[in-house]
Amino acid sequence: MADEATRRAASQVPLLKTHAGPRDRALWPARLKEEYQALIGSVEANKKSDSDWYRLESNADGTRWSGSCWFIHELLRYDFRLEFEIPVTYPVTAPEVAIPELDGKTAKMFRGGKICLTEHFAPLWARNAPRFGLAHLMTLGLAPWLAVEIPDLISKGLVVHRERQGDAAE
Image (tube, rainbow, N blue to C red; front, side):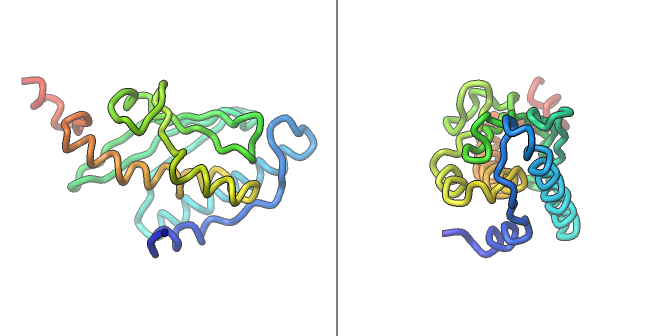
């Protein structure tokens, strides 16, 4: 069961209407426009609630995405590069978000730094496809993963803040 903060965050992300993936040349531009609008709305809502935590950009056809996300832990900001491709079966299938620099540091990750969303997020996506989009992936998939995994990786010393990396090398 989702907590109230998660429900509130999810309710601020609009559901998408166009059922199209990258192979659907006629409807993909409309779907992509909806995706951008939802992402912009999500980032703006995050900024208003002082919880801004990611940036995304895509290639020209909207099939490859990259950007950054960050997580604040004990008043320190940890930044990570992220990337994903839109699967050919999108929006029925959710994209697999990768954080390459964390590859091999946690069991909740697949080869190439792809985060594991199969247990919790994949069933939610399946129930809500095609209305869910990339903003939902970030809000309901990546954000909870970061909230659980990053503090654990920090406590194990597998992720070190950039200001403390010099201390760890000495």
